[in-house]
Length: 481
Image (tube, rainbow, N blue to C red; front, top):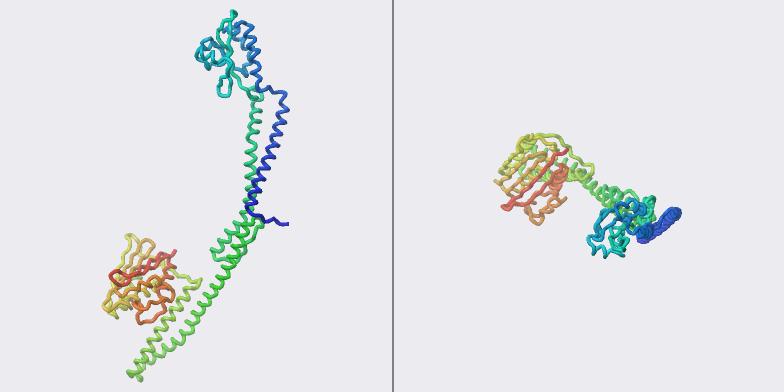
């Protein structure tokens, strides 16, 4: 049989009671072993009040000596009566002054304090201090003798003190030690049970992040709630896989459709374009009416070819295997060549174009980019500005080069963008209705293509309207490593 699937709440409660039970059993066993050791050593041990019981015999000897044992000359004889390994003593006069003894700490500092200490227990940390009055042979009070001792097995058995302390510590600490040990072991076992589903979920999340949905989550059959989570995640994965497969399939079908349309239309349109060029060059049919019609056909075919080229371009860019081909170029030469091209285009509409270039001091004018694709970006933006600028208008093209980065700013004094659609200008197939749409039809793919190319160059492109009128476009190009 496999493992039983149980709720996590029940597992936690069961684990807690199991820890308590095992700790209690282990503690009882330990205490039993300690008790056995203690009983085996019992005949070798003195009771806790062993030294306290010696005091009456010591006092009897002092009383029989009529105070003679309390003289400095009789110190050695007195210490023979007192077991100094467990009792410290001191002899004081009737004012509490210490005459001699094995401890020099003063516990009574006056006659009144001495009288008040008789038949009372004084304490020095864990030790008991007791004073007993002494008399001479005439029965006169001459002082007192004090004893300091402890009421504990460790103090009553100095030879077994280490063993007794260890036994005492084990008795006190063992329940807590066992509780910690069993908590760690059972907690570790419990954590392994819940780690497996979590590890499966994390692995699955990473695979989904990398667009890999071809896997299956495995349930551990131990924790009910976690298995429910795993099953829910698996259901989500299946639904996401189905959705993405449908989306990818539709996207591929759309790309194939666009590519097929572009391919099918380009051939006849190119043939028409070639024949029209031949008719225009022929002198025998150079009538005004025929030339006007042929010119219209020629213009239409040019526009159709341009649109088909855009479809082909966006189809190529949308493919997952699309890559740019970066090479190291001289930026200054690149800008100069493009400037000459744009000046020729601007001259046809009497538009002025002002080009400026600045480079960071000490920086070489070289950058690794795909110059063909960047030309496409600039051609799209600047030709749009030329198209929508009025005659005798002005276009400013500013280029700034810093470390590993190239910034293009294109400014014109045309009608600008519609404010309501400025946020959608980079959407595929989006076209404005009026201000910058003009009469020259297009598919609304130019800015989309430009943005995709710029992203391939680790850059960005933004557009906005100028407060004084006209459009402002900024293109940031990063070096491709």
